[in-house]
Image 1 (cartoon, one colour):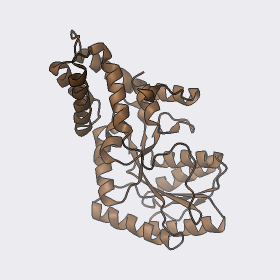
Image 2 (spheres, one colour; image 1 turned 45 degrees about the horizontal axis):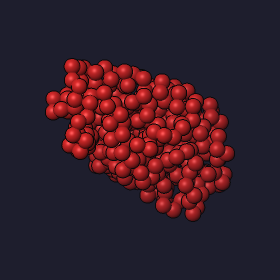
Image 3 (cartoon, rainbow, N blue to C red; image 1 turned 60 degrees about the horizontal axis):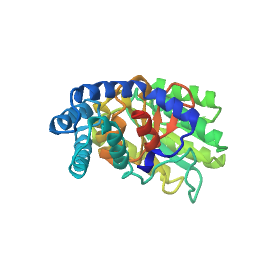
Image 4 (cartoon, rainbow, N blue to C red; image 1 turned 90 degrees about the horizontal axis):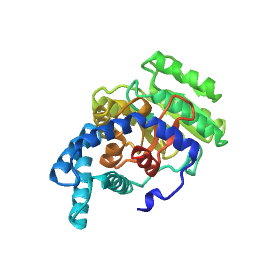
Amino acid sequence: MKFFKKIFSSEKKETLDKGLEKSKTSFFSKLGKAVAGKSKVDDDVLDNLEEVLVSSDVGVKTTVKIIDRIEARVAKDKYLGTDELNVILREEIAALLSETTVGEATDYSIPTVANKPYVLMVVGVNGVGKTTTIGKLAYQFKKQGLKVVLGAADTFRAAAIEQLQVWADRVDVPIIKQEMGSDPASVAFDTLNAAVAQDADVVIIDTAGRLHNKINLMNELTKVKRVMQKVVDHSPHDVLLVLDGSTGQNAFEQAKQFTAATEVTSLAVTKLDGTAKGGVVIGISDQFQIPVKYIGVGEGVEDLQVFNKYEFVDSFFK
């Protein structure tokens, strides 16, 4: 297929290859056992492959779709050798992911909006890498020549405000904050007013990292949105949910909770370099039909990458 004919940028691709090394090694170890002693893709191989995909955190629904696609290939081609399985998997997973294209990012640029600034609201539970993701995005946006302002609206933990301040200092962008326990909507309101006064291009608002009951979460995020819209029409322009890829199926559950509580328009999946659960990106991208915009494949400030499905699948099956 044409998906893998393109040449990827070498430095970024090397980082991605390295970041997915644990996931790839684990997957192919399982795949090797699944096809051991078999020369042909038959029902036994497909059953074993299904188990490999599910245990690699691809998710049951997405696994069934992949198996169905491979069964169709087997029926069409009559005979498929197990030595071809790697290529077939790569092609079918890439084809599956290509069906989720709306809202995908191709770089760190931001869409043009009628009234500046472009407002990005970031949601996610504590510990998923939310603050780090915000800091790295601020760095990338600033590198594009954009003027960035951060808003510390996760006011329920002093550590959250302090961590965002560290990133603001590191990246050298202004931050608007209040005392711990302040109204998050008030912080968001102040941040947008300050950003408008400073003629900023981008605002990134951090929000509370608590998965309390959905009604409270919904009310809180709705209030933050409503207040922001008093300052900037149609804001936030993007609601980015940050998920920890190393938690595997728990990341699916968090995605379910947050998409039920608020309108999530994009995803970032972090910590993929330290886990063998990289398959979760495939399942989340497919199941939620919300574009994965960014993936975290390392600790460095440059290691938050714009997600490219073809690069990802190429690295996973390399």
